[in-house]
Image (cartoon, rainbow, N blue to C red; front, top):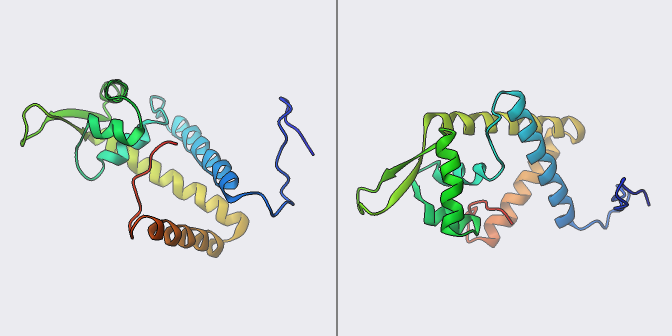
Length: 164
């Protein structure tokens, strides 16, 4: 078995019994690293991986720091600190809720919306690279299969993404 410089064994691609969970973890890491490398290349140097979860949580409607904390599985203080960094980067802004003046909502800024659009473009590029290796029909079949399995497991909807 081949090993990395640190002695960690590499997975052998000729082993069909590699668990899907392991392959998904490797694929996820590959896509996220590729995303952030390309973001930096396009001038988005102030984007940290956790920002994506917050941006997606705010994409359709403003949300609270408490909801962000729950999504991320962190304390309200940690979520607030993360949001502070995103406010400083002009990706989100805090507003006061119309229903409850005590509640502060986190909403996307125009820069945050531009970042989400760039992320979608980069994901399309990365998927096209995968399609160049295995073919578009295979990539489409993987997506369709995953959507079917996940919506079946989550009551017909895709749940919000969150870190592990």
